[in-house]
Amino acid sequence: MTKKQTPFGGAVLAPYSLWALLFILVPLVFVAYYAFTDNAFAFTFDNVARFFTAKSVVDGVEQRTYLVIFWRSLKLAVISTVICLLLGYPLAYIMARASEKRQKLMMTLIMIPMWMNFLIRTYAWMTILQDTGILNSFLTTLGLGRVHIIGTEGAVVIGMVYDYLPYMVLPIYSIMAKMDVKLLEAARDLGCNSVSVLRRVIWPLSLPGVLSGITMVLIPSVSTFYISQKLGNGKFFLIGDAIEGQYVANNLHFAAAMAFILMVILLAAMAGMKKFTNHRVYGGDTL
Image 1 (cartoon, rainbow, N blue to C red):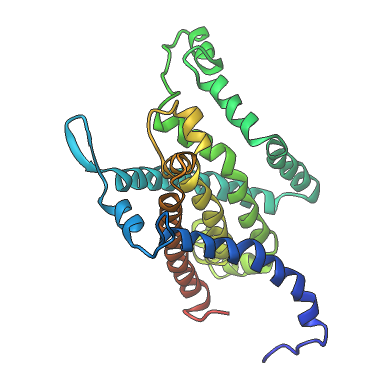
Image 2 (cartoon, rainbow, N blue to C red):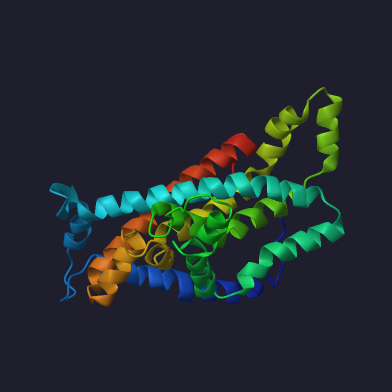
């Protein structure tokens, strides 16, 4: 059964369509245009090919420079996303099942850090994780040894999880808060224990929120550069650092090629995840 189109439907959507055209589609077209042109704006595949073929020697070992950077970025982004999901899913469930007053309190506590500037939050973690920082001072007070965290991949993951955890919690919470409690009660009446209710009812129904959360965490985690620069002490590059470096060096066409390749890979991954989610939730039919 199709919904009836209102006479003013097109007019209502016009501002959003214009915004999407100007600030989403047009920039993407420019990125693609720069990616497949050289400095004289002649068509070329060299920028894209360079991403896959450029080599460098590190510790006497020859490696493909930008592929190594990309896989490192993807690895840290996936680790951060998984941690955010493991932390955010039960937190979202607790919020959804809490009283309205507690929901507002928990929502406020999650949102407060986001009111602060992103740079300030990152600098705060630098203060905490430094060798002479708050964490090591606390460990020293307890008689434990110092832990070197700053300048490692672990520090970057911590920064990503802290900054992007709310983006995982909020979409899942929005789905769970609307979940019909009667479905859970019916599952228990039919003999499901708590684990079965989670696996057979709550998890499938919350998959759209999980997909949104994964998307909102994974994409900025892959392309981040400031967190890796400050918490990683610039000891290793992520793909965001590589793109920024090429942009600063005025290599706009190669920077656009890296951004274009990253965008295509992420869109393909998101499409695959969406198809999997539709299959699990809707039996293979998209709505």
